[in-house]
Image (cartoon, rainbow, N blue to C red; front, top):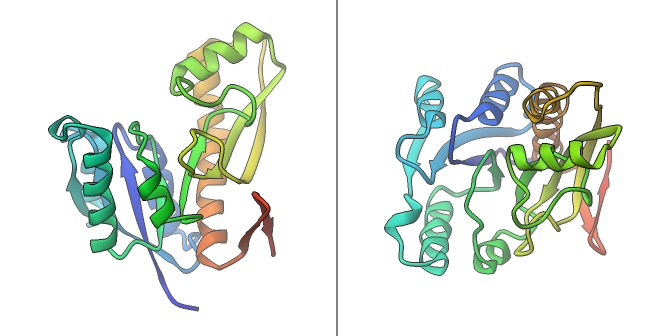
Length: 210
């Protein structure tokens, strides 16, 4: 089984990137290695996390490109240059167009802070997801790792983990619990499954072999 290059896309603090770096140090990313971190913002703290762990970084600032198509092309070129086998969205806030999704079909994964198909799609990101969950009064929320397609949050689901909503939760407290109990656990696990060739996609659904 050949070794796989993991490229992580970031826009902010990089807590999910840190979870992946920590998992790699524990030998939990299977046959994969984080070889590059690409940020859509020059001042993203995630870049510092990468540099402190001797991981190559690149910056592709979204607002330096006139439209999504030109930005997506630049990103696609960068991913090809980096020989990306797996691309992980870790708090990456830019939606790339279908050309990137087609070039890396079933090779891009994202973690979403809810149990898809609840509270997902365009506009559902960050604290807003948790605000909506609490407004609805759900008793359980959680996180989903899925493949990225041109349609937001609609790709095949790889892993999900439920997290209880507690009395008195705020969007911030729920966000923190879902990160700690779900996102930081299932994202590295999904990466490991991918890098060990354990995931196949049939008819828009994933089959995981152990």
